[in-house]
Length: 426
Ligand code: SDX
Image 1 (cartoon, rainbow, N blue to C red):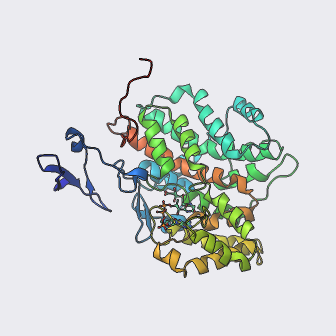
Image 2 (spheres, rainbow, N blue to C red):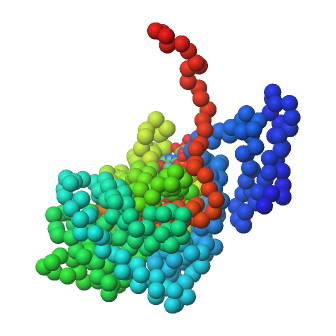
Image 3 (cartoon, rainbow, N blue to C red):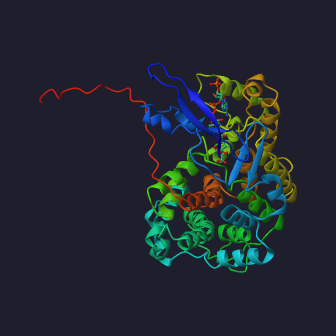
């Protein structure tokens, strides 16, 4: 792949350092900086803004043009023409399934949706008011205590079984978090239901009354799963890859990804958007909050805006906005103050020089919370749903990492601490 070279001249290094330059299918060329170590040099890139941590074939983002491809297919077309399990098959295997492969995949996932009965008792160890993400970190990591039969990470079949188990069990574990938090009994999954239908029923059915599936809400839920499925080497996905590089089992790696997703700068943003809209309270208050967001001395950020990679509209947010309108229309919600504030906030921000000059556009989290709230899902569950959706991305990257020769990830540093010094009593 190296058909170009970079040449580096460094003061104090008596020769020109030649570095291979690789090009991929899409996106910027990359400079292979590994030879620098032999010259006693490291690269320095806090936040990995300019660093390609790996080679991958799964997802590609063109931030300047607002493009997101999963195995080459645009997210807008996948959201329109595929369901979440078909996207799971695509991310994991590289191609869309034939009808027969899809039927087999759906059936196999459905056969793994229950969790071990003993895992149910883990929930009782938490306070009822525990944040569901705290519970998810615990119970997903605990899955490795139940599945000793498929933990050989070098065995492709074991990796496939783990993928099925994680895809299938995340909705069950997530719904159990919600039921536990409201003191209701857990609802078992049903094998005759689709993925999103099963999840919504486990969330809202009770032993006294079943949940009436609304196809519009169920399709919206499935689209939310799809829109969050994968997104290149973001913080949690990089966490999963790094944890995987030590040989940790897939359940522990996914638990690490869940923990990394929790932050409000990332996966916690959808919950933070709803809290921000509630704090703004009315359209009249928006200008004051816009000024807070622009104030470099004020830590307030406009939640749901901006992105490390997108310097254009996040293509997911366009689909999310359309889905939001569909859900609110289906539910007859025409006067949602949150939506009014969100739409006015978006209009103002897209005209304001501060946001325009910094290319801060609505991201995937800006409208998702409004949809989830309309479906009846509490804000505390929003990031759990993000984690549920992103599990396929994490396990696909984990699988890709282990499908080729690899080594443990071990970044270096620029040390600016104390030079070597003698202990005062040495
Ligand atoms: C996700 O990585 C992924 O792919 C993540 C994700 C995925 O699917 O995995 O896409 C999901 O996390 C989406 C992002 C959700 N987060 C939020 O909505 C939280 C609000 N957004 C910001 O915290 C911020 O935009 C980040 C964290 C998303 C991006 O941070 P960066 O890349 O470090 O942005 P930056 O600091 O380089 O921004 C440049 C400027 C700065 O101002 P100056 O120093 O130039 O004066 O823009 C400002 C920032 O202060 N800025 C904002 C802002 N986001 C950036 N100012 C106000 N409100 C904001 N939201």
